[in-house]
Amino acid sequence: MGDSVITNFKDLIVYKKAFEQALKIFHITKTFPKDEQYSLTDQIRRSSRSVCANIGEAWRKRRYPLHFVSKLTDADSETSETIIWLDFASECGYLSSTVYTELVSEYEQIGKILGAMILTPEKFCYNDRK
Image (cartoon, rainbow, N blue to C red; front, side, top):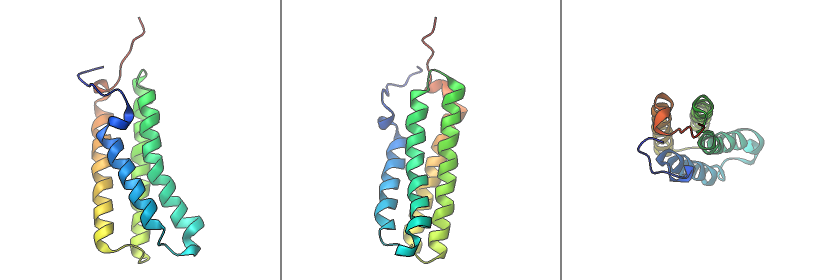
């Protein structure tokens, strides 16, 4: 499995970053208007959490590099979706420019890490079939 000593997806930097940002979004969205509860609030919470879930699913599929990459691609897509919801939240006036900039910057970094993982699955995948 390459030089990696990581044995759990929760130890991946990208997972830790995504989880931290999803929690920030959860707490920040508590201040969103109630009439956004079933639209913007739910959507941004779901997409931010889905980044983490897809990273976890990818980790479990490391035996199959194409499946691993597919799930990481899903995580990266959810990262982009989260940024779009942040754009809406900002334009609606629900986020300060500082919070918006920080969150988008973090999600862009998460996307870059995922992109690097997608390009080098051999660093994470293994094949123990003989």
